[in-house]
Image 1 (cartoon, helix red, strand yellow):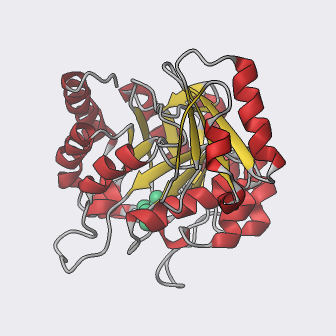
Image 2 (spheres, helix red, strand yellow):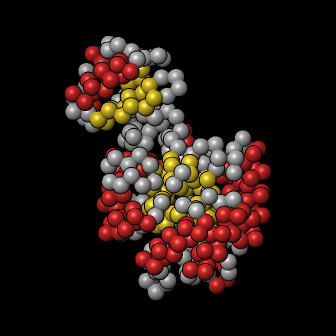
Image 3 (cartoon, helix red, strand yellow):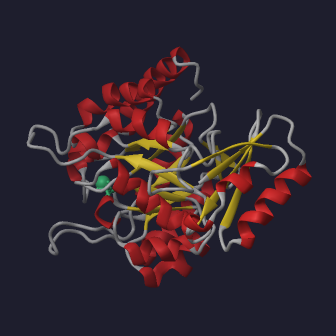
Length: 337
Ligand code: PEP
Ligand code: MN
């Protein structure tokens, strides 16, 4: 249920409505927009007397929200949410580019790539330390040492870092060393992990699951937000279809849909979506056209010898060219990059 306040409703009127909701045992989320304030009620709204609520001062109308996601719902929060990570804004006019290797491999590799991608204009450094691999025999990541190397690359470049968390026991360690916690596609519905990261206030990059619907994805965001962490960034990274030419099928219609249903920033990962480095640039431009707020691109200094995801990784030189192309495209869409 949401209560839409009249244009110019006073702070006191807003407080009275929020209080009336809380008195009924509901949570009241206040969102102050340019035109009017919206107060979202979360909980058992069947107890509400809508007629009585509608008569309170400053109330324009009371609306039922039929979707199961509430805090993630744009009806609750009509303006775009901008998330801050180490002074960086994600979700504003400037597109956020997160770039780096699939896996952190050694100190020289991660620091070298970090410097190169920063030079080309990336604003966040990505790199996996705990890798969720299909095969138990494949490289599993440098784990704790990988986190330390990421922290060192951050010190050297000033770039915030994003890396994937796979285990609830690691939350505290990640909170201390990482700027943005990534929930990978395979863990999108690991509800215990969602609850645990929801108890932090760190920005969470929530990747869409391999075979999950838009609604399931938004419900996973709701899990994190319902625990008190509003800092969720959604990431479309391709879904599983009958097509096998590409690693996954990039669902750009989901970007358009989610931007309309939800107020959270959406970034697109054309690297995991295609699995092919030569397709990354075109799909990144298409993602910008679809309204994405950022991109995640895998970059490796030696793709043929990468310990994971070499075929989809750009070299630093290719990434530089990519950024120039994407920058021009962003300008066409009235965005900066
Ligand atoms: C990754 O970002 O390296 C990764 C494993 O991504 P996804 O969870 O989208 O497969
Ligand atoms: Mn990868």
